[in-house]
Amino acid sequence: MGTDQSFLGDVTSALYDFLARELPRFERTDWWNHYVLSVLTPPQREIIERRRVTSLSGLDLAALLRVLDQNWNEMSTKLKWPREIRTFVKESQSIRNRWAHSGSQPPMADDIYRDFDTLQRLMQAIGDAG
Image 1: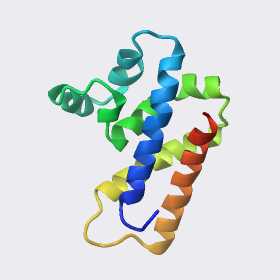
Image 2 (image 1 turned 45 degrees about the horizontal axis):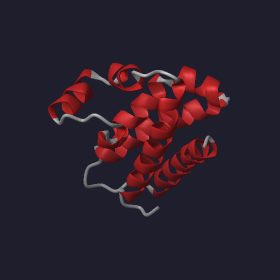
Image 3 (image 1 turned 90 degrees about the vertical axis):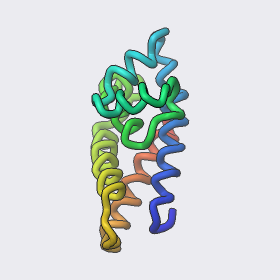
């Protein structure tokens, strides 16, 4: 992971792989509507409807993190995740927002380290769930 925003692409790919594998396993034939569309914010739903997105591959990191967060209870029960992983999810949402809306001023080195650490911990958790 470099200090540019390319690490967010790594997280997006890992999260997509995880959700694409796990959500269909929840034994709902309508998992897309139930676990994805119904939990997105109105602006996120508007974007995917306008773009005619019909799979997780069309979602950005913010939407994928929201899907994970909003389905936390069922997913954490199924995967027997400890509560600390929820903290990583919530922090990852803040990290994504901070990096997506950063100005021309680069983040402080301590903040970059903290962000990488949190994102790596989340990626470890979703990687271990497979």
